[in-house]
Image (cartoon, rainbow, N blue to C red; front, side, top):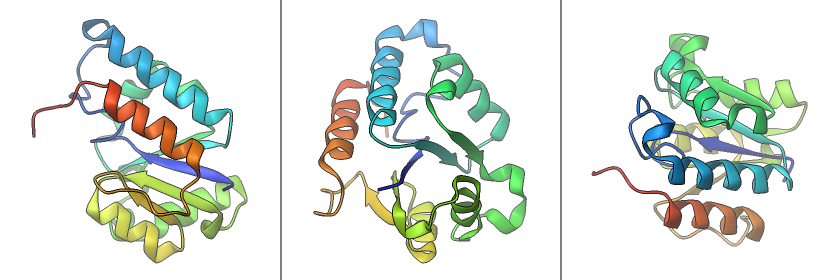
Length: 154
C-alpha cells in the first residue's frame, strides 16, 4: 500500500467539525496518535467532500494537518469532483505519483467509496469488517480510533 486516503466526516471527525478541540481534548489526542501511527507506516491523505473551510480549519486545529502528506477537500475542485466522480482519486494519484490501485480509501461515505472503487483504489467501508487485503496495521489503527473516539449521535 503506497498511501492511505482517509475520509474525515464520520470517521475522523465523528464530532461536529466546528467543535473546538479544547472541548474534547481526549478525542483529539486519540485522533493525533492514530494518524501519527498510521503515517509511520504509509503516507496519509485526508479527502472529504464537506465544507472546505471547515475541514481545513478542523485539520489545523486538531493538529492532524502536519501529520498528512496531502489534504484534498473536493469542494475546491468544483462540481465535476462530486461523488461518484473519480477525479479526486486521480488528483491524489497524480499528486503523490502513485497508481490508484496502490492506495486504499478508508471511510464511510457511500458516494466517495463508490468513486474510490471506480478509480481502482482499494476500499474499506468502516461500517463493515475489512477485506483480507486491508493491511493489519491500517485495521489496527482505524479500529483503535473508532473504539476510542466518542461518536456523534446518528
